[in-house]
Amino acid sequence: MSIPTVGQRLVIVGATGMVGGYALRYALDNSAVRNVTSIGRKKLGISHPKLTEVLHPDFADCSALAETLSGQDAAVFCLGAYTGAVSDAELRTITVDYTVEFSRVLRGSSPDAAFSFLSGSGADPTGRSRIPFARYKGEAEKTLLAAGFPRVYLFRPAYIYPVEPRKEPNFSYRLLRMIYPVFQVLFPNQVIRADDLARSMVDAVVSGTGQHRGPVFENRDIRAMVESLQPPQR
Image 1 (cartoon, rainbow, N blue to C red):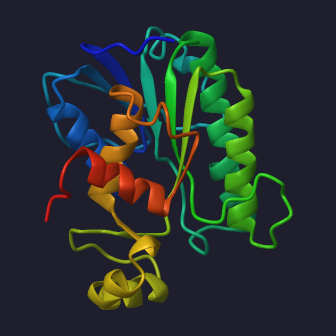
Image 2 (image 1 turned 60 degrees about the vertical axis):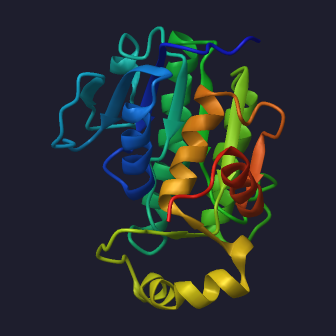
């Protein structure tokens, strides 16, 4: 399957989130991207000549997105939830059901589209993990790989450093942010900057940088991709 080099049409799901927000900004500045369609439940609050914004309140049914998703070249899927922020049932719904439903409609409307998925470290496609997050991310990964897309890239970051100040979702994230400078030195393959992660996800589907590496990118693989493309922004 050849990869278009110019004028690609890219869909980003979850652009109001941390990683999705960086993916959106990077895609809008990317000369290889002709149009970016952002699909989400909340307004972005920005405008751009390349940006088409579509509000979709319920990802449990994405049938209404069929026309919007027609003729797309690639998708970057960053929709998700933090463990503990929602109930276990809702975590599975957001992590698995929403991903599966969106991919179903995208596959039907743009069968040749490439797909970047924001998974997580420890994702377990076997379903044997005792950690719900790992099982659900693994289940979503397994479904995407079987969906028939020509290229699927599964990104499994460890701790995602927010870069810009934000309200952290829980104590663990507040602690990790405080000790990040030391943590980064001691455990470099257990951290990734949010902007670096986002750029990697976009480049994988737009520029084909993941074509000979995927489909699974662990944290160390993401860091290697960033370093091979250009020096990380500091």
